[in-house]
View 1 (cartoon, rainbow, N blue to C red):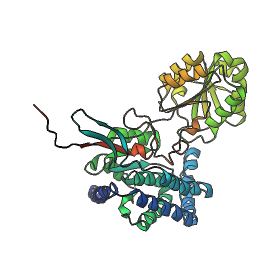
View 2: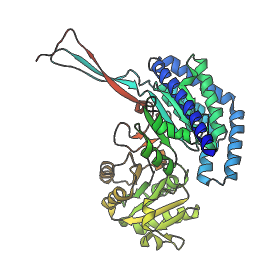
View 3: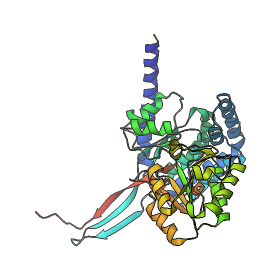
View 4: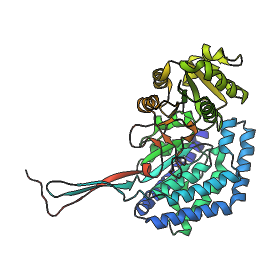
Length: 430
């Protein structure tokens, strides 16, 4: 009997997802030809709706938070889930920033003329239909919807069950914006069920509809997406980010950057998880930085040299160097200059975001050149690993892939290209 019910449930979910896919595919062909003014009008109208419905969104989020606390979700997940007046305004502002961005669709990336007179252009075009699977952060609903619309893509959003009410309230504002601008509401669809089978369909059962999947969430979610997806995936598995304090670093700058990189928001993928300190400045820099972290409530797990500066430091294990804590915990060790830092990051890092603090330009340029991560910074916090901070309006996530998109995934990264070739009667000989 249970098997029959499960089969019926699977059939219903399958029918739902196939219908959503069909609608998205049809709408994607409309969006690919939609002009910039109409897309921007939808985004601005959606921003206005978010502001007008702020109380409704906050009420929905409060109910999500109540349930999340009852389920004893971690502090990091609660922080990602929580909305307030400032975050709602940031969402609305993000939509307006995306509207103000140049439209990548139709942009000519390169053009040239062949000796036979053929004129060849490489032109940006939408990817088509994008599936986005995400956890906790309800602001992703707004960011992802906006970026996909601006880049001419239809999108199917599947948010986490812990943010279901918040996501629905924000999605309703996006639909208001689409309708106000005369665009089909199916351009931005939100999966209306918590059933996990919906995720399975998006990953492997909708290849006729979905062109690319973007996961945004914890390691288990991203790992599942990467393993099961039958369409291309844009994303990153972990954000094991490093700050390296070089012997040529200004101490006050180093203290400020390390504290911000670790503790501004511990639950974001750009939060620093490992501190590396040059052995050349151990006597002057290590103690003050480590003690400031400890005094701020951050647990420090260090090697013998780091443990020697303060009794509160716990011994680090080999696993600590690989760990993305997403909490007030940081691993710390002393390395032999920039060469040692680069070697450590190459061995233990996740190719996400790394920072060097130094006044030595030559050392900094070596670090920027030799560290093979999506984002590499000099004298700046790793918390700047964010599309909004890059001037991209918003982002769907940070990609550590080495093909198509790398780093913050914004409107341009959600396009591909085609070649337009113009001739005047040429035929190929032979």
